[in-house]
Image (cartoon, rainbow, N blue to C red; front, side, top):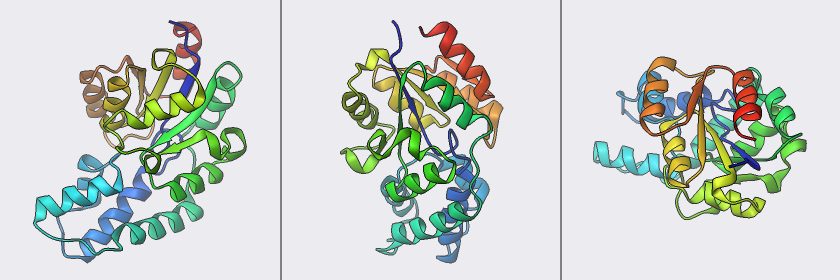
Length: 225
């Protein structure tokens, strides 16, 4: 079926921000004495999760209660580093510009909305997407890996799920897209472990996994109508 809408994840897909986000989480947790949450551990086990879900997971795993302002601390720390050093994933800006000529486009992110907006602006895509084409988990009852966010984004964009393609770099995002009945492509351009992530994404039913944005653009234009 012909594709009419492309939904882009943000962290690790458009913005090379997974390292920034994971470092912020790691730093905050280690300061609290939870020393197992190294940057490596956060990359491997926490990437792509909504912060509200992440807090519940950490509290459950460690039988602790995190500070009530933990998410606010994360937002401030990650936003500061985003404004200072964030870069787009190589080829992402050009890919969005090209695909926007042929399809409707929007963002569907599990990130905190203020940080997502900051990131999209920082990489130079806010004028293209505009705020009403950026959807975040705060707008739905359940974030990824549940399908709510992608279904909400497609509804707001006026496109049915079967005519929508999702581009994701994490297993939680891939699960959400597949559960929403959408075609899902994976990208590992800035993945911490591309080979392992490719295997994990493929096991979830992702249609194809690519290492570069140019490959995704060519594939969508040739194989997706």
